Image (cartoon, rainbow, N blue to C red):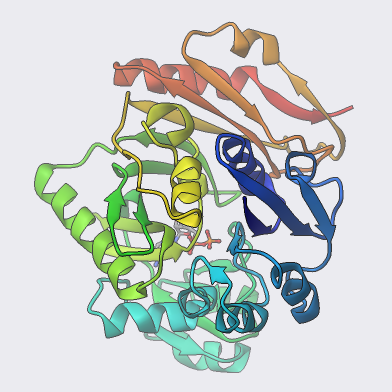
Length: 375
Ligand code: ADP
């Protein structure tokens, strides 16, 4: 039986492991927190730091295949493991490009992949110098920021004072009409499968996705563009794996790549119920060298993220769960996190329906009915 390791034990690892039960595979997780969402679902939990060279190397050296559920891992150790014959998916080279937003943007430019115009700044000093003729802008920390924490919108010269004092990308702010994400699956031999794009709606305050519809409502010619761009990103990364390509459609109808994640992704949670082969099932097929599955949509869906309520920190409690479980074609996923805090991702709910109004209506109902609070 193949031995497969996952770096990181969050909810993505948890959902990946839920799917692993269907395959002949022995699973390993490396993570600092023994109480993490994935810990009790793997065969072997190894406590350690995914950012530490020795921890990652020692974890991977006797495994057949290693993957990630978060980008902030030690890539040097993965490189050594790959050089020694371990299969590392995504490749360390692809991971290195994506991990840093500066190299990620350079990659898009190099391969003529449309992306928002940008400059690179190294410090607050440089930010102040370069912001004047570049407004409004969005500053993104090169490495280390995620879930909106490394992103700052700068509308005016005065705003620059709240910017980051570190290497970062300074993008022109795009007037966004729609945010789209496409998940691409790439097998070891290059076979590629595209999931139908999803449409995302963000909470402007928390900067977190809170509502999603799949498949996205876009015109046929825009759909072709989206698919072509997603394929190009995956092809140029030259790596097997699952890639989530996030894009914007601007008010002028231009398409831009925002960023790519080289792993299973939030925007693909709905695929568990709403697509023939989920992103998690698909990743196992890739990791274990089986044929790709069918990414097509079974039914339209909407998805609500369950975030920790503002003002609630402590031991988690779910209010309104029964009411939501009574609803038809509604699927609740709780991530098993013991502690909640404002804005923390605690679970999600997928809603399936042929009727778009029903999808939107139920999503709103669930947002109001189901609350993640502290005891
Ligand atoms: P994270 O890696 O933290 O998810 P993103 O780069 O995806 O950060 O940015 C978070 C959100 O900020 C995006 O989903 C989008 O709503 C907004 N955003 C990012 N870049 C731009 C841009 N150039 N113009 C307008 N809005 C942007």
